[in-house]
Length: 171
Length: 171
DNA sequence: TAATTTAACCGTATATAATTCTGTCAATAA
DNA sequence: TTATTGACAGAATTATATACGGTTAAATTA
Image (cartoon, rainbow over all chains, first blue to last red; front, top):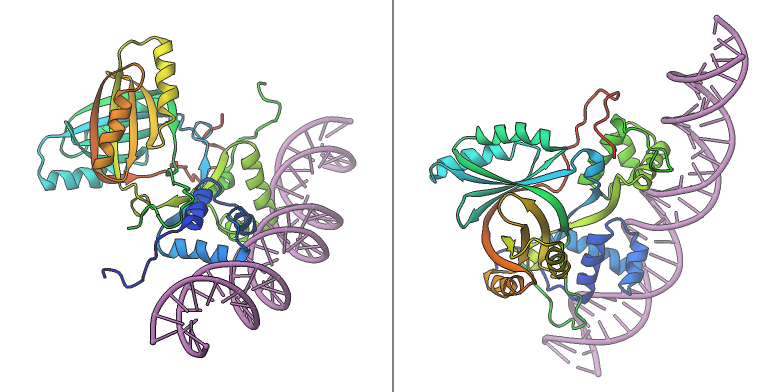
């Protein structure tokens, strides 16, 4: 056994709790309990357990990006000039420091990193791109500006299967 | 005036509330109030106002994707065969139906759509790609599998500037 | 300047919810 | 069968959210 705490498989109720909480993170425990057909106490026990076991990492408000000055998104493909671990490390350390870089993924398939930027407008893009290009090890970049967000689901598609004997997954 | 309700500019305290809530969405109002140097009642008033005015769109639990069977991510570039609005509409209607498609962005700069997929593993990728390729209008695709998530910030970088006279933005 | 209005705030009181505690039931194993 | 375990419900307690009333300060107007 690799961990000291035993983590039991998730049952149907756990999945239902997780699915509800990822959509309504501030639902009252009483109401959550009703929704999953439990009374308040076992329900809150399960939530605490799911938090402790790391299935729930935290809670957050979903903010309106447009109203808060981040209505524009762009993806930047980045290729580094040498693929040594030193170059990679320096690039990563620098890129995570830029607040407008919402995501940075190391990818396989043609270039090295894919960045997702959140920006107020296209003017802001120029100055950020200048920063990205000057990052250590950057050889070339290619930008794709988002014209329209067709879908932006943050939640995971949890399967609310009736069969509690087939839990979907654990670590 | 386009809207009937008057929305005042956000001040330093509002920004601080939003920044706190996007990180700790389930913080008790009492504690939130302490953090922003208010008493409980004006604090909850502001939160309700921010919700009503649409700055806060909701709350959600942050779930551990790996533990819940979505440890693999991939980006797929999609080019459609004709860029008529009919083709675009059909593609979009179909792609949003696929639960594993976490994001779908229409982009400018070489191809038409950029999709972000959440998957249990690489085996699952095959069947999803088959679905994507069969979507109406799809001419070609190119996949980039995520090797490592260097950064994945969901929150907006709200500026907690001391000067309350220069609010960052509104709709 | 002085009076008036407005908005934001604080503290208190009440309502609601979270949390703890105790006992019961059902499943499992000895 | 009997002991043990785990999960649950319901009640009691604690904590929190929310509504209310009064105060202050700032802005506006006379």
